[in-house]
Every structure is written in structure tokens, then in C-alpha cells.
Image 1 (cartoon, rainbow, N blue to C red):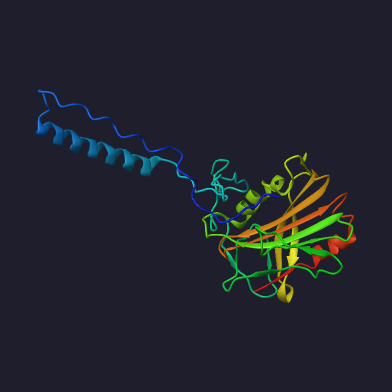
Image 2 (spheres, helix red, strand yellow):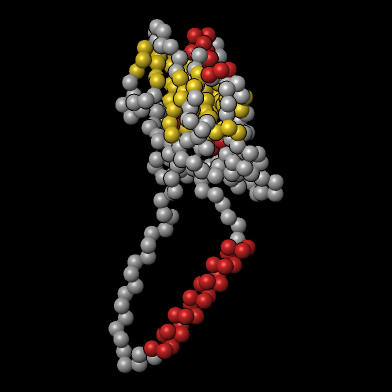
Length: 261
């Protein structure tokens, strides 16, 4: 699995700064200074007009999510009425954000705000073996006694962005192949599905699950919920050499994952 840091930051510049123009030797017929000043003034006016036209009639796009390597992530999902495909949505584009209280149920298409923060809680280890991941010291990783199944539970921080919970969550699911080795022949099992994590005081938080076959010779589920307004991302990975849903012990550990706030 390749390490990733899910903070969002602007991509690296697409174009390099142009090299300095070579100096041209001044000849006897130098341009009059007044004409140079006039040319500069005219250029400034033209640039200002162009900028004004772009601001008035140009289309704007929100910044896309960026991984640690500076590569942009394609974001798909619902768009605003009249928006073109691929446009990103903001937290208030189609719905207001929801301040979560005890006992609430927060759908994936509603942006969740935990004012005091939220903490993802892994399951009990049981007879499974916990593993230390050097580049993910805060991640809970455990494997079954026969090494035929594994579970990962990890919470990372994200910056507040103008993108919705759903759009950013789908963006992370699009990278499900990163959870498998390069030699894997990953095959998606249809579109992501909605599931629910149950937290303190029976508070429920919808998550999205991407399921794939051919991941390191088995089946993998990637469970995500990204909440930029809260600054938190839930990342859960379930893997089984044959079937995730068919492993009762693995599913019991998954359903034991909770959160508190």
C-alpha cells in the first residue's frame, strides 16, 4: 500500500517561469522615452480590461483535491442545477451543512459539522494480531490468525475546502486501487454503496463503500467519509482472501467501529 497524506493543497505550478529575455544591445536609433512610457501605459490598460472581462464573463472552477504528491484527484458526484459535468460543489450548493448532535443521522449528501471535533474508534483486537505501519503510526491495522483477512481503521485531518462531503468522499474512493499492490488486477463491483457507522448516543453517519475484486488475490472494501467542515476523514479498509461479507469475524469487527464527539 502506498502511503498518502490526505491534506488538500494547491497543485504544483503547471508552467515554469519563462527564462529571462536576452538583452538586446542598444543601437543608435533608440526608441524615444516618451513612446516607451506610452506603450507601458497602454499595456497596463489592456491587461486591466482583459482581467475585467475574464472576471465578468469567464467561468470559474473550484480547486480540486490534491494528494501528497501534488497530483489532482478527479471529483465526481452531484452538481448544481445548470452546472456542467465535472464542476465541483460547495457545502451550501445544494444543501446547508448540519451541526451534528447526539442521536442525529447524517446522510452522505449532507455536510457534517462536529463543532468540537470527532474521533474514530477502532474495534477490539480480540485474537487478531495488530501490526505497526511505520508511515501510518496512528492507523489501527490488524490481521486474522490465519492471515486470510485484515482490517485498517485510520482517521486523518483535512483542510476546510469549498467541496462537499460527498464529492470529496467519492474522490477518495476513486483511488481504491492504491490500497492494492501494483500487480493486482483490480475489478470494481459496481458503483459505491451507502453504509452507516454508529457512534456515541446512537448517532449515525453515512459512509460510502467501494468494493473491488482482484486486490492482492482477494476482495477489498474501501469505506470513506470526508468531512472538510469538521477537518476529519474516516478511512476503513477491509480485505479478505475470498469474500469480505462472507467473513463473519471480519464483519463483526467492522460493525464494532464507532466514533465519539
